[in-house]
Length: 557
Ligand SMILES: Cc1cc2nc3c(=O)[nH]c(=O)nc-3n(C[C@H](O)[C@H](O)[C@H](O)COP(=O)(O)OP(=O)(O)OC[C@H]3O[C@@H](n4cnc5c(N)ncnc54)[C@H](O)[C@@H]3O)c2cc1C
Image (cartoon, rainbow, N blue to C red; front, side, top):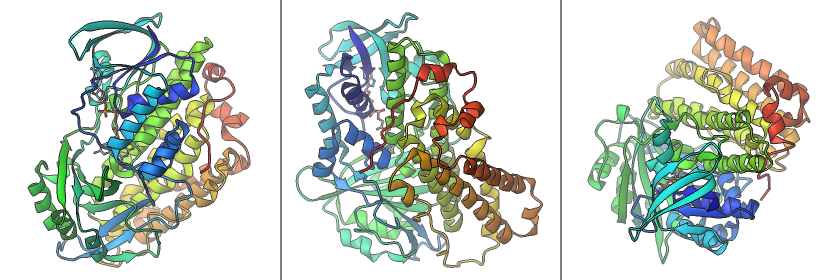
């Protein structure tokens, strides 16, 4: 008998267990999962939010002492993708040292440290596989498992979290699968004993940004329907190690990528410098996932079951948001369990938190899915990415760091912003044809040094100095004005037709009215504002259930 039973001993199950031990130590937490691990491990790049979460559960010291710092993201766009031998790239690095820390992690040592922390903190581990789950209305769920020694056991628990990754135990059992429009596949390898100086040979046109150390970044190289990551990670013993991976949209990419020779062949044609780089080292291991995108129709229930991590949804790894979304989901489950303990958890609140999460997940996923259409076209790709980076740092991160995803009013607001065909998702989608038209009218092969994906404005440096809830309206207002200005600039470039296009005129109207509306709330906490409450928190039962506040992880470095 446990209070909370977590199915799956992977990174997500263990992150959840660690969070509950820290924040709700009275709960008895059990993890069921096989100790023998033969599944691929992937996800070496943290972002600011996942880093804060790891610090919060007690792994801050591990990150500093055992892992590598990450000085943001560096993007490499081929200046002339039609000529493979042209070695020139437009390179976009972060404008300054990022205001909040993040890390590049060796997942094997991170996962070990996390499991050690949990065992030390009294999380019970059952070495075995779940074979059946019986969900009951009175929230006394029964989980049967086969231990690794072959014996069977049945556990009961008031709350059950499915963290079984791609096995997706509950999503399959409950028929919660929702289709996705575009698939993704990845092939990756870890490399040792390589010649890092080869990367200095990149013929880079930079935008003037300077990193403290060009090597310690998440490097992204764009190609036709694909991108390649290079993530330096700390080797367990001596020497350097780097994770190299290629992610592609199969409908645009052609034959699936399954081996090192195929990878080298593609790189020789697309990024010869990366082929040289991989050939200079020793491949330690390789792995692949094919067609791994899916989404759950529903993740949370007021009846005490929850789906988190890969057991619920997958996101494209482009911006390394996987574990950040997981952190947000764990905090949401924590708030629901707290409400349940007080007898205040309602269907409406669980549904609002679910919708808020779905909105974030869609925003992180659907824009990226369509980015593959233009990945080889530097100008279009960079402009779209710029707008995505602006929304991530000016809206998503401030809301998450202030706990909006765990607050009834905040969650309802986030749900509306991320709803397909509405809010911000629509704003971004409407930009796409305009950017294509503007790109078509640019003189061919201009240096494209005029678009920055990342800038101090895009990355909201001034907000991150204090991370204050009351400054979110200002951050949003500037974001909407920026969108208005970018749209006007693009319409100017794209020519007369754009000024008659109702989609673009509607976009202008929407972003400027949003800017004016949030401007009225300057200096207020949006989730405490009566106006926002009236606009977004329908009915009010969810708000009642949530009580005064959810949990946020607002903490500066
Ligand atoms: C190519 C790629 C790159 C990525 N890069 C990043 C990144 O840079 N940064 C980032 O934050 N995220 C990244 N992600 C996302 C991140 O890797 C995933 O969110 C995360 O690894 C998912 O972990 P998980 O614990 O849900 O699943 P898994 O790691 O698959 O763990 C599931 C666990 O459940 C266990 N299990 C399965 N069936 C049962 C059963 N019946 N009973 C009990 N246990 C069971 C398995 O043994 C396993 O231990 C990336 C994802 C991909 C695909």
